[in-house]
Image (cartoon, rainbow, N blue to C red; front, side):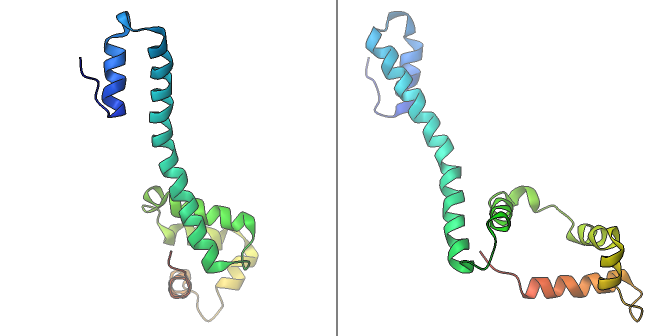
Length: 130
């Protein structure tokens, strides 16, 4: 039987013919299993490191390590964070603390939503693009 060069087909052939394989095929099967697993896991790690490299080139030393970690994780997993409602999160953040409520909302602007929209526009205009 012809064994294909592609590792997946080779591994399938080894598993299918497990009753009659030799001892060196067991080691080869284990190597192929490790190789296939490494291919799947290293893609996300490479994506994280390339994102981190681009981000660090942009900011350099103007950001703390903890903040950098949080931002890179959010950017790397943006498919999960894309559905978050920023307005609700911002409103909860502002109204949670009395000091923040006074800092973000003045007496001349009693509408919290209006102030939050202005803050979000400012944050959007001053945000970085990765």
